[in-house]
Length: 112
Image (cartoon, rainbow, N blue to C red; front, side, top):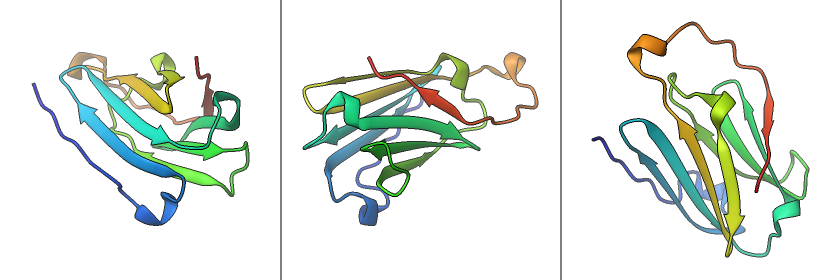
């Protein structure tokens, strides 16, 4: 099992965030971001190209965080939920047998 953590990457975009944690396990990537001052309806998640963008108040000018995704991310099965000021995004990872050329299309992720 492989695990890695990152905290406060790209600090200039962290004015409204307290902490971020990225873990890559054997078959999924989990991203947790603590967001103070946001309600679920004020947060938008978009996957475009090979990155996940977390935006506040539905404007692209208020990007809270951009996270580079691995090539084997299965964006079609991405899940997100927001509870107690913590946004958790879970992205399954494809195994080598599932890898194929993937064309990234912008995709909004609903938050539960």
